[in-house]
Image 1: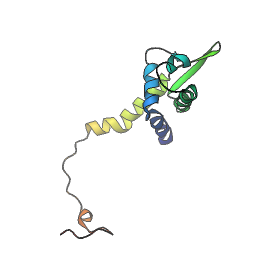
Image 2: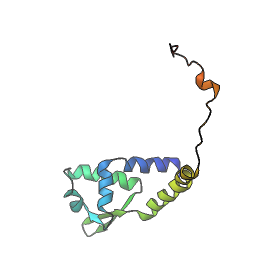
Image 3: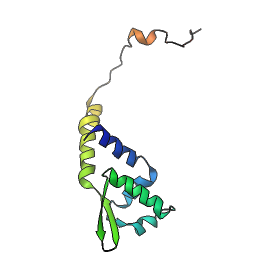
Image 4: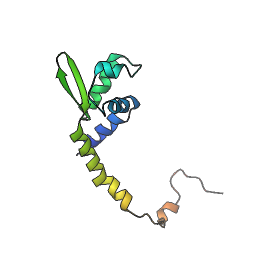
Length: 117
């Protein structure tokens, strides 16, 4: 997973409405009307949120007659989980962070900084 792809997914998930939309799909696929009845948002606004989730690869859709049904993209979410675990989370959890002695540069006066009195 590239950094750009990770950023797009995290941006897509960094919205309370999009997270709630994804949450609605955890147990079963949802059509637009089922999603709309859970929100006080217009159909175009929900469509916009779905478009962002879909373009980030977080959800998939399929046509069922004249309806479109949405579901989480399990393979992309698994890829995200594995990437985060491998790249960040496992390292953060396994590392010890002993107190560090700060380098001298931290104690030097920075440009625009007033002397402490």
